[in-house]
Image (cartoon, rainbow, N blue to C red):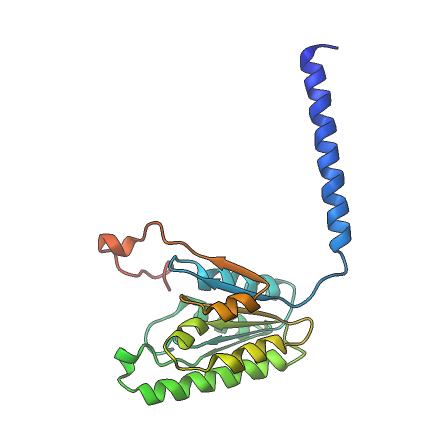
Length: 209
């Protein structure tokens, strides 16, 4: 046996052992599926995009989805995520989207209204989370609503923890409170390395919205 052949046989044996271990680990996890609470935060881009990707995966499997947007204003700009989900809903896909924010306080000039709209958004979201027919609920920009003290954190945690066993919940936004991070099953922090806004490039259709 040549050295090359010997190396090849050793490598094949190593890969077989890896595959066996992976297969065994996968088999042990089967049957442990459950509804997850997934959290996307951080200063980098991709938080809402990550959540929406899960929406599309659910819809591909004909699973029901509800999306509640806390800060975004449906009259402020043509949000591509909202427009796409509305089109999918019109085509019969099992998805509902509610854009219930008024924008940021410096835009609304009405802190009292901001509080009322955030509470309405949470009540809408809580109804969907408790609905056993909904497979995924996305709470878009929830963390910002909490950061700006438009919502109390305690009932949000209680509502997420009380979700039906199969229901997945995803929340997005910068500045996620530590209590939510501790509650979540999966946490991803988007790190900003470079952003075109630093070069004076504005938000663009198809990229930011």
